[in-house]
Image: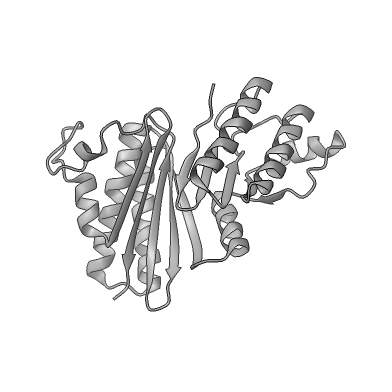
Amino acid sequence: MRIPILKLSNYLLISIQTELDDQTAIQFQEDLLNRIHETGATGVVVDLTSVDIIDSFIAKVLGEVVTMSDLMGSKVVLTGIQPAVAITLIDLGIHLQNVQTALDLEQGLMKLHQELGGMSMKMHSSVAIKQEWDIVGARQLGREIAKKIGFGTVDQARIATAISEITRNIYLYAEQGTVAFEEVEGIHQNGLRIIATDTGPGIQNISQVMEDGYTTSGGLGAGLPGVKRLMDEFNIQSEVGKGTVITTVKWLR
């Protein structure tokens, strides 16, 4: 089994949703190093929220991943280590030396932003999309963040609608994923970046799904093309069998 590795800007995001056996861990190490080499990624976030057990061998592999990635110019942050896992590692006498950790994905991304520099970003929050009600929660949170940034009511509605379309796609086609919100502080303008990530089946033909009127769910087919029109920047990256990352930005005028 191979673990999906998604690219977001200059970063790689990995959410491990299965228990790690020795072969899977070794394959993951090889795949990640290859992806760093292919993409030139400067940072990596590995989310371990769903991992219940990390034994001495898996801990060794994770430590090697951090060291090897660093040698290739890419910083790694491990996120979501469960309390029971942390306690067990200490009981085993295992200490992950020089390994950066964070509570969750959003804090992991924030740590990379702080360490690697670049455009200033404030990660506000993220919402896990697992059920239909999460679509409403993500939409409400996005609107609230947009309001705090200073967007007017019309742009708040545009942003909330874009979030609704993106998260509904996650719910319908990938079953689960995450939508994260970042306040972007540019030199001359501020804005809101929305990042939707899933490890679903991926999109085979991106050009087709970006056509007006195209739908496989019985809707009006305004989804992703509509999001692109509502927002100022839109980018979609998808790999069949691995998942999709949609990044979109609305600038404050």
